[in-house]
Length: 241
Image 1 (tube, rainbow, N blue to C red):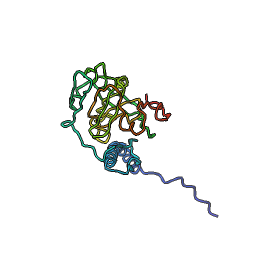
Image 2 (image 1 turned 120 degrees about the vertical axis):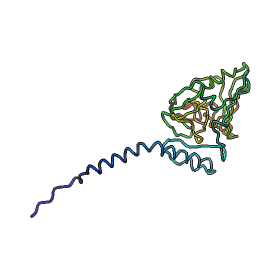
Image 3 (image 1 turned 90 degrees about the vertical axis):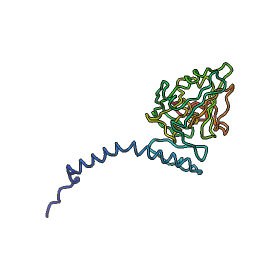
Image 4 (image 1 turned 180 degrees about the vertical axis):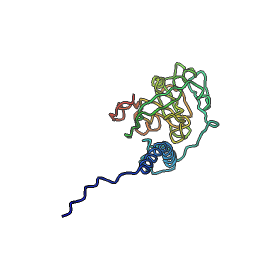
């Protein structure tokens, strides 16, 4: 009776195959950020033209979901973008994108937490502290709040003056060490690090000092005006600070 052949544990991998596999892996690492940005740009553009909201359910490498309350949002660039600071201030000011980039920049890394449940950990934002723009404008003693408007023509938000002066509230120009893209609210958005992400208004165009807080777009539809992560909207998420 002939003995059984020895058990085979797998054919040996040739040097050429092994090196090719390594090359493909390295190519994937290099290409991944580009592919991710492309996917995010596609989903961001599709979401703005999707009246069903189904694109919000699609996954993407960055972990973000794309929301807009209008069917389309105009694009702004370095030539056309303007940010106005007005209301109860002594020195109303209009900033171009170049003006904002010339000011001292602050970078912070925090988790982004959406009130709908998703979170993107360790997200870098960079921009001008809102408190510096308020100081430059000369806030009057009668002011008690700040209202934010956006060039989509519909979205708005508000903070108390005390909240707006926190060091972790930015007029953001960059996210994840890149200039803010249109889908993420660029070229300039608000970033309120310790609050749910709906407070971080995209496509920021106006900062107006007011006497009292005025409910923003989602707050008029039932969301809390004070949106501290884990302490509002009936949620118990871990804080982002």
